[in-house]
Every structure is written in structure tokens, then in C-alpha cells.
Length: 330
Ligand code: ACO
Picture (cartoon, rainbow, N blue to C red):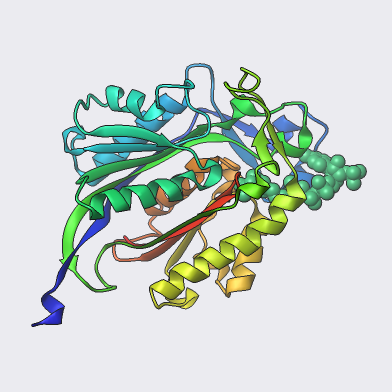
């Protein structure tokens, strides 16, 4: 039998899109709200500005806009989609899932739509679930959307957290394709998701329907998160690359969750990744949680850095703790 002729079913990224609220809040604007400075924020995090949603911009509206742009980029109509996954920790309502609201906005009445909740790792979790659904034959065309309005759950009197986050949405369209079983073929090659609930109280929201009956505010032990982030992210990236039998030098683009410049630099040092291979948008977006990876990915496609055929490694870590990595050829 000719091995080269063997075909496998892969989840291929056909398009990407993003959406940002109109309002930009700079560090100078932030220093009018809490006792902080541009110097402190830039030095500790790399963030210079973030977008903040107005009352009419919600996780649903931003997610729908990003999805529309991703479908347009893919050259596909909404009627092609048979699964929508929205990764978010800031849904429009406690239920139904924001994914169903996006489904309605897009005029889709078939297939399924649900949310995944893995905080900043949500997009990586969403890709992983979408890939499993496609590989098992349960879905043909999946919209994976990361959409967040973290500004709504920030404690705007807490300078240790409110300076870090922003709002926005990004989306990709995945489609099932039969491709030659080769690392050169397009599509998702490896997905890895992890969690360790022992650390649930290091980064959390102090409210919820079943406890306080309120939405609550984000709380974080920043140093603890930092300590675990570099170790967890590096280990899951290592695992993904080992499974694909590649090294960091083979990866064209690292598209990490945009939490903090120092976390990204620490991870890059640990794995020997060249900094000019890392897509960074946190200077202008801040940390947009589940939206940050698809926002960064879309930015790098639009500015011409990421091309078809490039090998891309997505990685994230977030509350839970949750973390994960996805390796894909675009
Ligand atoms: N402006 C000015 N001063 C501040 C601010 C601020 N916004 N926030 C804290 N400070 C002060 C503190 O009060 C403290 O002052 P003190 O020494 O007088 O007590 C001083 O700065 C140092 O505070 P630390 O909390 O020790 O600062 P640190 O160097 O740890 O930096 C940071 C804080 C940036 C949050 C860091 O811990 C970090 O990067 N953690 C990772 C967490 C992260 O990125 N989370 C994002 C969500 S999780 C994720 O997406 C992976």
C-alpha cells in the first residue's frame, strides 16, 4: 500500500476575524481611575492600552461581529456552519449560552451551539473540542469564537487587577478536510488541554448565581499566577511539540494568550523561542482572556505575518488553573 496516498480527516482553519469595542482606554486614562502610571503598567506587563465596551457592545455583539468577519474571510456563508463554540467567562446572561445568541444573530437554525468556560484558556479548549467533533465526524464546519467583556467584572478600585484586562472578540472557522497524512498538510495536528482545580482560588470571580446570586468581581494573586504560568505553559507546549516530533525552531509563529509580556518572555527563554516569532498584541489589547489568542492570530494574518502553510502554536493558561496548547498548520 502506498503510505503517501493515505488521507486523514483534519480540522483546517479556513478563516479568521475579530472585533474590538470602539473606545480605547490608554494607561494615561487608567491613571485617572486608579493610582497607577504608564511606567508601572508598561514595565510590569507590556500593556499600553485596551479597548473597553460601551453598554451596547456585549460579548454577544462582539462575538457575532468577529464570526461574521471570519466567515467572510473563509468565503463561507453562515449556512455552512453546523457547530458554534463560544469561549467566554463573561456571557451576556447566566443562560442561555452566548453561543446560541450568536447562532440566532447569524440566522443559523441547524446544528448546535454551546459555550466553554476555561477562562483565559477558553479558546484553546474550544479549538480542542471543535477538533474532536470534526475528527469524530460529528461536525463539518465549526465557528470557534473567543469573546469577552472583562471590563464588566473588574473591580475598578483595585489597581492590581483592573489595569490588566480589556474587551474584544476573535473567531476562526474550522472545516473538515481529507488531506494527506503528512506534517506538511493543513489542519490541527495536536491539541492538549489540562487543569488543576487545587488552584481555583488564585484567580477567580467572587460571585456567581449559586453562591452570592451576583456576578462578582475578578480577584487574583498575581505572583502565584505568574509562578505557575511559565511552568505550565512551557510544559504543555513541550508536550505538544514532542507529540508532533518537532522543536521550537520548526514553529513559524507562536500565538500565545496575551496575559503579560514577562510571562511570554519567560516562556520564550525556557523553550528557546525567538522573540520575533511571537505574535504580541497585548500592548494595544491588554489581556482579553479567551479572546486574546484569536485577536492576535487575526491581527497577524491581517498584517501579513502569518501565511497559509505556516506552522502555528497556540497556548494559554487561565483561572482554574486551566492551560493548554494547540499546534496547527494554517
Ligand atoms: N500601579 C502601580 N502600582 C501597583 C499597581 C498598579 N497598577 N498594582 C500593584 N502595584 C503596587 C503594589 O501595591 C505593590 O506596592 P508595594 O510594594 O508598595 O506594596 C507593588 O506595586 C508591587 O506589587 P506586586 O503585586 O508585588 O507586583 P508584581 O511585580 O507581582 O506585578 C503583576 C503584578 C503584574 C500582576 C504580576 O504579578 C503578574 O504579572 N502576574 C501574572 C498575573 C497575570 O498576568 N494575570 C493575568 C490573568 S491570568 C492569565 O491570563 C494567565
